[in-house]
Length: 260
Image (cartoon, rainbow, N blue to C red; front, side, top):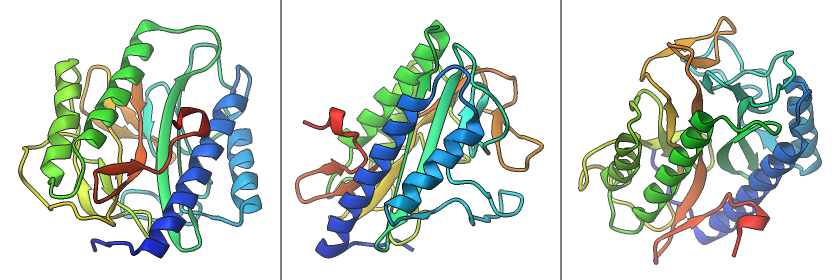
């Protein structure tokens, strides 16, 4: 299903996007050496409930996961890249942590992810991975607007990723979002310009470039959810929810300090 939101729902989407951004920024600020992933999950739950919102994850049970996800946020560390199920692990200096959060409030969902390095260490490989996904995300957003096509976004993202020398996996990518978290259209992280669905004002998209340092192959963790790089290399993932407007694309999940 491809959903086009009316002005009332778009206003709610803006509100939900701001909530997702604020929660992610708060969790990033709290994530330090020694922080347990299960504490991050508990903090996320508390903030979601206090805001009168609902988790898109806790009861989520798609075909690619094993049973309900059972947690309120995805926490992916180092070689984990997607669907990271929180577990009893304390963050170490130099860990590359990705937080991926989707919530729904007043009937509209928003989805975003951030990758960052914990502590004072800053491994150059990790810095490059994060920077590349952020640049690819910016390129994808710049390519979005009324009349553009999904392939234009995918091509813009894929160009940044491939020029940086990273393999690209197309099993998982961006997606439509609205009254539910995952909708059509699918937005792969590489593609051909001028192809695919033509964007219309009122469409929400979650764009999410993600990469692994030296492989495009994923393996599923024993938890049945967490996807890791097949070689054990480090990974990164950046995501925003955007709204297609009459003039272009509006980012709904920018943290307050990043807003103009």
